[in-house]
Image (cartoon, rainbow, N blue to C red; front, side):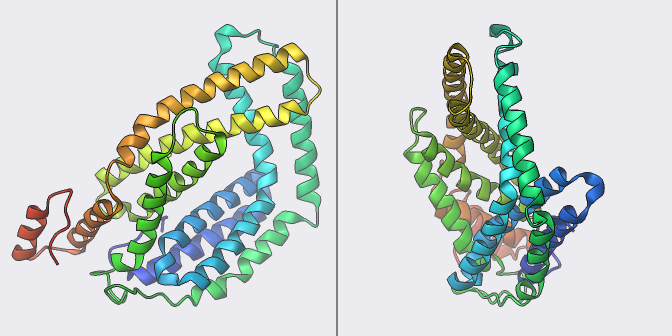
Length: 328
């Protein structure tokens, strides 16, 4: 049915449905030997990320105890799956780096290092995949969580009862507010010279907000699709930045020529600065507004999505404008 809400579906049912669909997708990916174990792990890992974003979106409705339990459960499963994918991502990142600077490099400049990284990737993949048949064990854990998640009790603490969709955003408002607020706060302290950890922490919030816009896209597909695209774009830029930093750390422990090591360091530092300079103006636009303003606008989108707006409410929405909430 897709990673998004449905107009005819109560929001509480939609949250459970999306969670169960992602669990099932992870289980199928890990069991599908035809696609290859590596691809299956990659797909299951993506499902984990979508689940954790959903948990954050529904955090206010789930309550802290349930949210923390489910988030830790998926986080641990994701960690089991990550080692295999992370090693492959580092090689991909190196290939992107050498392609970007192709005109300034000897074609074989980092051939030895790449060979070392490929061998490292194969060793880690073999160890992780064969260790107690990791994919099968993780799939069983996912399957075992279905009944628990199907029984979630969701409620809004501020307004609305979640039984219909008219006030359904009340269930999601606390989670939306928190993720956008945290992303905005982190961005306001960033600059290109900030350390890699600060950039990585900001990227986490960007990615959660990206998934949230995908879930809410039916509210107004055109604008929310465009917002989602920009969030994905900046997430990819900073994701590449992070992978390059990790590449440099791994390379430092490899047996490579001193000249090649110095060249790699210079290129990584240069490319990271380029990526961060490209990400900054996008982030400035994405986080230009206060959290309440963004959520109030989504609230108006939600009401319009639910059906014709009564004449009196339509006037209020028009008077509120894009930057102010409509009167209750």
